[in-house]
Image (cartoon, rainbow, N blue to C red):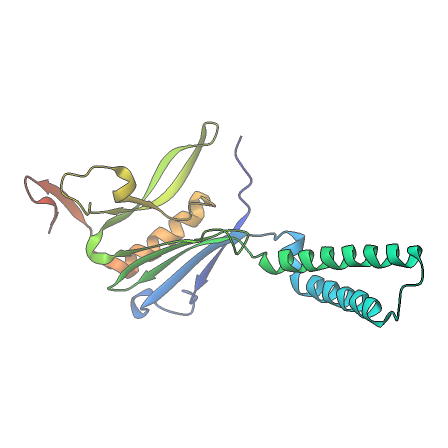
Length: 215
């Protein structure tokens, strides 16, 4: 069964207001169209939590003395509440909008970036110089439980002689989201136009020299 993949593509700067050939950089960002409630209301939620924390802390500090076991239990309960509020504030602060992006720089190369839902999670980044780029292509493959998907990838020259590991020569764009084909086509078209212009690219393998571009 196909997943909804309700994603939005942000293009910066807008290509509707600019000619691609006049630009030096284009950034494509894919994210969920609908954000989760914590991320969507992050600022007001933090404000409420901080206000409640301040109220509880002030109440504890202003209490003169503990005259009974009952008051001691209340103070302990308030301390637990304060600890929970601090933990919630930290967790909400660490929440962020997950996104995948590809930044195409004219004459320089392509920057791939992937950001997850939490700030403490590893953020993957990879820069591919244009001199090491063969082409940008859209492939068809299987994902998950036999789901057929399209994905955009960058074919690169192997950095080591005789190395044929696909992980080193194929870089997948938008790996966390794997958006639909209509989004990939827009990114592919604009990226190739900025990197290579209208020229077609042909490559062949030369014995002892690896891949060589044929003009």
